[in-house]
Picture 1 (cartoon, chains in turn green, yellow, brown, cyan):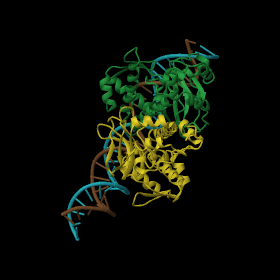
Picture 2 (tube, chains in turn purple, brown, yellow, red):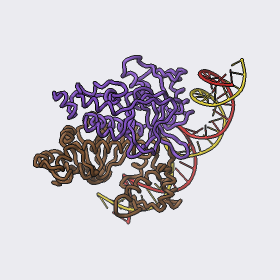
Picture 3 (tube, chains in turn red, orange, blue, brown):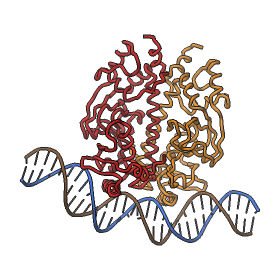
Picture 4 (cartoon, chains in turn green, purple, red, blue):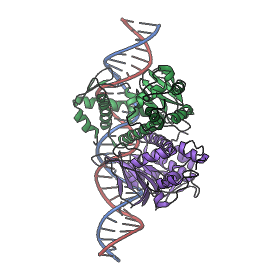
Length: 253
Length: 253
DNA sequence: TCACGTCATTGATTTCAATCAAGGCAGCGT
DNA sequence: ACGCTGCCTTGATTGAAATCAATGACGTGA
């Protein structure tokens, strides 16, 4: 205790990039007992502190766990599964603002009340913790606050890209853009190359892309007939021609 | 030096809300010499530090000062005037992702490169500073980093609201939503009650709402014919029936 | 095995906003 | 005064996606 690495995590001046996917689950110290990883060393006091913060929870597929307008008491970090985040209009129209998967953080877009609703589209394992506790975490580990600002900035970039999609792209361009993003994400993680398994239904896709179910289906068929993708029964999609997909998606660079 | 207020701004534990509109311009210490206001007291070292950070600049109406894809070297804080932030597709389609006015912060939605372009739609006075300097500012005044996280969170909320607008609202609902927001904002600041002067052209409005110029014009005419608003020549709009406007806008709550 | 509900695909028709087109108005420089 | 340009409005027509409609595939439970 008191060594240089100790100082590091307190000041937040650590050089090595810290991935939130590893940082935040470690806050669920009580549940998963993976205390180390936040930084090189933690003192007993830190461990004791972390042991009382997060709370591991499981949300069954199809169940909501955040409701727009409710007091924003919690933050969430997803360990496994996928959730959809959405906003509804009084007459039932819905806009899905994003899908949150493993490692993703839910609850940034909230002031005193949640600005969105959230529902599990697969069984979701997540770590829940109080906003008040989070404030204490910031005080103790400034690097986390810095990291959250980076996360928020990145989400803003994504959001602006989605505005471009919703405001100015055609149906087929929207589908291609979506597949492009998920293809990139899948390719980034080591494993299979071009085969994707999308966890969401056509309805979710429609609500995400600002279209109807029928138009999503037609756009997928169009891409399939052009030989750009292959569609399987189990929500599986194979990207056969990534370059053409990117071209259709109007990806700038 | 060393008093309680000193401790406050160093630890960022100040209770009173700090408005970025007052905080960040003060970083332009060299230009405006309004050093006090960040917190109750600053030591000589702080003043010297602040005197070398921001740089006051003026951007003439119609001129761009951020280009999407360029290395993101600077942050900006607007002191006066309005800028539009936008993304373009290769074929010229444009989506304006937001308008930044007095006190607003530009540059959060950037990683190593800008994810958007920015152009002044009025003469803009802004304070420019380097991202590298900003990092040092964070180290010295943690309260600013905390405040920036709040700002980013709020922008995420706005962005999600805009996704709902672009993905699911009709033309007239989009116009009404836009006027509703600007009406609220204007009403919040003391002064005139219902009269707005919009700084942007119909074209900008169209690019912001995901419509065409003609459709924006028609929607404005429709609202005018319904007696909800009155439209003046100089981009002036008076909200005559705020409640009906909100109803048309499908504002949830 | 069958009935039922959910989800997806495809076709026919309608509709809302885009496009095409014309004209008005204000500012500006010559 | 004149023409010019940029900006806005309004009308006529077109078009892309929504809506309406029918059908098929799949999983589940009786």
